[in-house]
Length: 120
Image 1 (tube, rainbow, N blue to C red):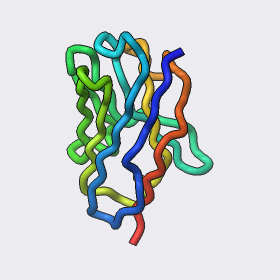
Image 2 (cartoon, rainbow, N blue to C red):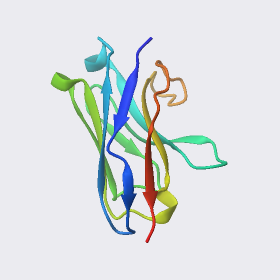
Image 3 (tube, rainbow, N blue to C red):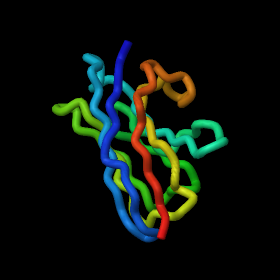
Image 4 (cartoon, one colour):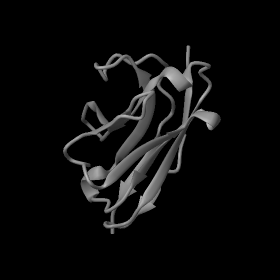
């Protein structure tokens, strides 16, 4: 099963920025739709941003205008640039491939995720 390794999280002040990376071992990465998901303590894991194989992107309303998802097929890596971070963005962030259009139909194992904490 496809596996993912997330990195780039950390502690940042409100208004700050982080860039998350997700490397995958999947051989079909170029054809996969990819998503970034996050799970805050006591809450469900929700989709944050998605990008298709043709680079069409979608964002949760809560992050529109602040987050940007991108992909580098040569490196089998998907990125999440997060700007203007808010305390409510605090969560563990994960990536996965999914079968569009249903973002909950993920195709790989969940990785360890990367912790993002937004706090002053």
